Length: 118
Length: 114
Image 1 (cartoon, each protein chain N blue to C red):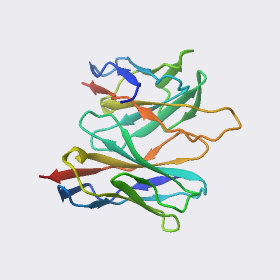
Image 2: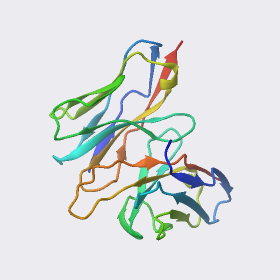
Image 3: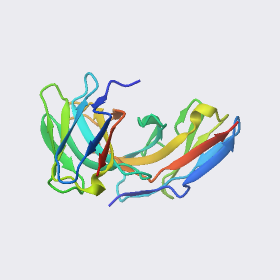
Image 4: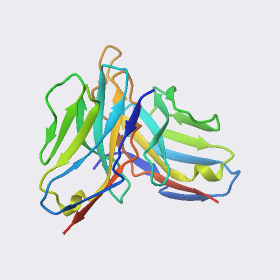
């Protein structure tokens, strides 16, 4: 069991609408990553937040945006929804050590939000 | 760019037997990590095992072990004494040492026959 929780678990939206997905990171974790997993495929990296700033982004358009809050929880926002945005959205939290350290802790995942765009 | 390939969309094995899932990857980096994740119907990705590229010794976690061939860029997962609870999608993933961005394969569906 991990402490990463995502809400909502399922969501149905209409094309053109906007959606906000939420993620609470595991206690002690300060880095959050978001992934999109289309049906039958592996996850694709959307972006990562560390200390409330985006510090890595995959090949996703600007209508995918995010936030990280002081408590390290995070939101994923998607504007102008398209049918192809239908997917499972996974959040993963991890702990980044001091700047001189090595990233040797692994990510823990939530159960995801299943987004359906109709 | 790094890529991860899983060439087996589906594998099946008899309960209590051994099965091997294949994964190949491509990278020009020398320092990286490789992972196998399990995704049951509950959808949560669960870390099964990880391998640091700088370590020559293959990682082992109970019934799960890997065969890491760095020169061949191959990273297979062996599951011994398969159990019904092992049934799931298995994903191979890669990340560089410098960040947490995971690059994933397409997954292998593992079916356990009772």
